[in-house]
Image 1 (spheres, rainbow, N blue to C red):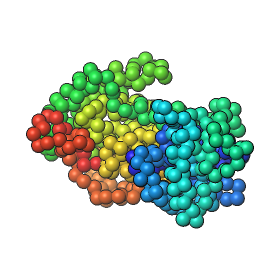
Image 2 (tube, rainbow, N blue to C red; image 1 turned 120 degrees about the horizontal axis):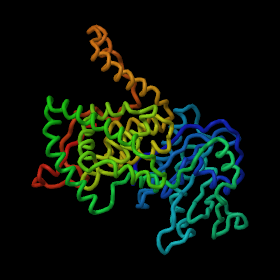
Image 3 (cartoon, helix red, strand yellow; image 1 turned 90 degrees about the vertical axis):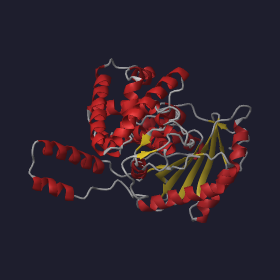
Image 4 (spheres, rainbow, N blue to C red; image 1 turned 180 degrees about the horizontal axis):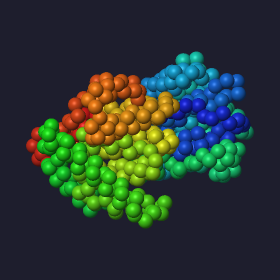
Length: 435
């Protein structure tokens, strides 16, 4: 189960009137920026006219015994999050989105998820916020859990509107809002490569890079050398992506993968496990370089093959940060959610995920990173010592609430969530940042 909630702040003040379950179901992808699959989505409503507020998404737990406790957590998260942003919701709309499994139809999905819908309605009601509507969307149809009328909500469900024909689609097109496929498709762009031959070659490269780089990272003097080499390689790879012919949208990820060798990918992935190196890499966050950085972080996330899946937390977090910094909040939440799936305790991803979900302005962190880069440039040109001391006394703005104390810069250990025995050869273990 994905334990990491996704929510956003209130939508813009454009007035759009949605009439009934059909238009609500059609509006969901525009509210989220993608088609949520295998997801619980909850949307807060404010005021007598039901203005959309915060949104929250969670993967549907596979074990039904978890549904009551998850429902309570989701209701509390959305309601308290709305209160922190300035207003308790007056009602909530719930969506359960799941395609039929093999041999299953949409009606069966709706009935199977009915207890979860009831858990969510009960949990919200316990906090004195009613669920105005609860919809199941499956197989191109929708059902209402709140409407008992067979005339408007038949047992076989109602067919979804044709894409692009609703009032929400027209308003979204006018506002320039795009829906970029399904959640599953967005996650697939960041998933480890699956071809067995490629996986084996990348695994060997990661093993070799780990044997070479980990002893240096664990050594105070060697860490600086690895950081410089890693960042220099990142610059060269970004330049290579910039100079390559513009990839076609359908083959962009494949083209990027071809431009990066297995050894280069392994060296950067291992180098980014050092926290300070990763923070330096986060400075490629705006302007023309941000797009090339994002393509590189995505490509590196795809190279974190078995048993190095946990190493993906660093490039996925950087991908999420660049997406958020450049205004792509749906892409940011997907990348950061995957980073936390790879390593639930990765502090940088936790802070960014919370800040993005709370609707904070990324400019606070951008200013901080610009200041760090400017301070290093000034030190290289011989800025007076007193100015450097004053910089070190400056309080850095927080991205969000720190949920646990920071750890050291490097944590050696197994790369897979399945802990291996002590007999595992050292060149197969890897090293990861303390966050």
